[in-house]
Length: 95
Image 1: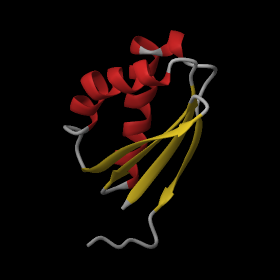
Image 2 (image 1 turned 135 degrees about the horizontal axis):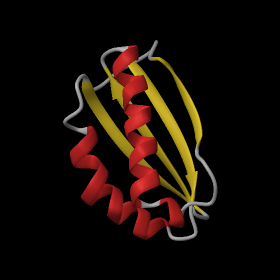
Image 3 (image 1 turned 90 degrees about the vertical axis):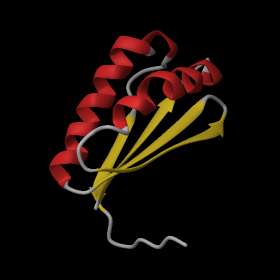
Image 4 (image 1 turned 120 degrees about the vertical axis):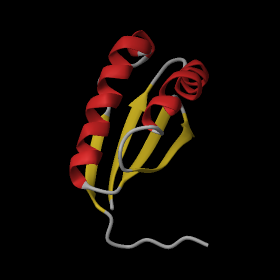
């Protein structure tokens, strides 16, 4: 499993969240290898997304999808590019 964490800053986080639910979730959830997607509202305009995919190639493709969607859909609401962290999941536990 591979995951990406993207940290965004926005002056309009609630609007971004609305657009993500409506526009991006349906796209990413149909991507090959998709396992999980989460968005955290951290306050002060900070949003963090976590995407989990089966393979590294699928995870990297999801980053391209996210970047393209942000450019086309919510770029004016963002304060600069996201901080992106990605890697292999080495500890995982679910209930």
